[in-house]
Length: 379
Image (tube, rainbow, N blue to C red; front, side, top):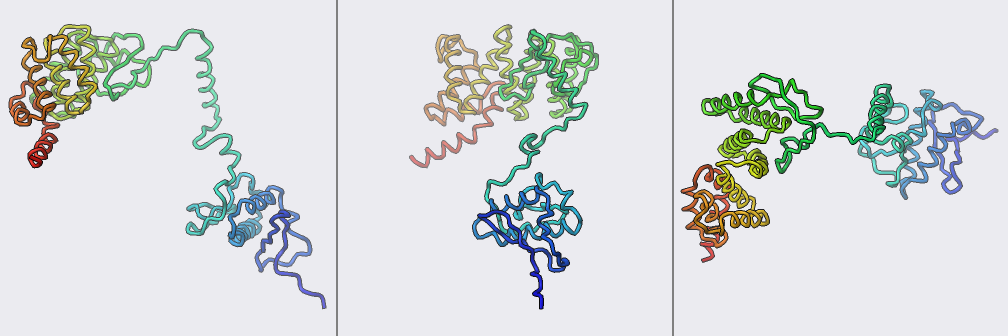
């Protein structure tokens, strides 16, 4: 009696890893070896899978491959599946589909080494690659033409805009003359060349400034007023307006930001004022010098404090000179009281802060109160 054919088909993969992938028992018996009809890409796929298999995981990998090949065979997808582009079996990956769309178990153990096969597409294109569409090719040609001229390309955007951490507006494009007559204009970051029709000229900006001051006193709507001031500052920058009016706009916005505790906007205005004061004369220079001292005390930026103290001392011929304005003397005394831990003097100065200095001291008075309590408890 002729012995029955085995219920599995032996497949020789490699001499070092001769594994047997069992096909479904329901498959009809075949006299020839089905593996011989497999595409070369599938054979290589199976061989690579076993070569990357973790020790002791061969049986699980064999079952995984068996299911994939059987399902692909049932759906006649052995030849149509691009095995070269298919990832190696990684049953630990969530919701990864097999060759014919089956969902693998996300809780199954890891079978392969970390050095998994990288598909050709991932090697060449990378994640998030852009398809070579006609429009994309046209854009690349336009970008390439920028380098055909020996002339340097001028940057026409606002570098870091108003969101720069130092608040410095660095506009390197040509100054424009605005033609917009709208008093109100929403703030948008510049990402392209400046359109003069969207920029308000100086006379319109002066009218806008008067309107904003009235609205702030009447409505106290900080969100609206802050946006309008940022829009004004942008229009001043792209037109390279760095005069007394520009400093007045920055000063007013800085005071409003201090009142609302918005130190981010305040710092941007304060930093720009430092550069404006270097070129123009303003009656508010001492007031904002005092604010800078208090702000650096808040941030505990010792290097900036020392630089500013040197600047103030040179200007006033000494840190305790009577030539300083009252607001600057007050800020210097606050610094001295903190340096010597004279908290009694510090809190008296806090109660008598001039101008908007009290709003800045509000930001760190709680911290110093805790420090004072610690000193008292230790005593």
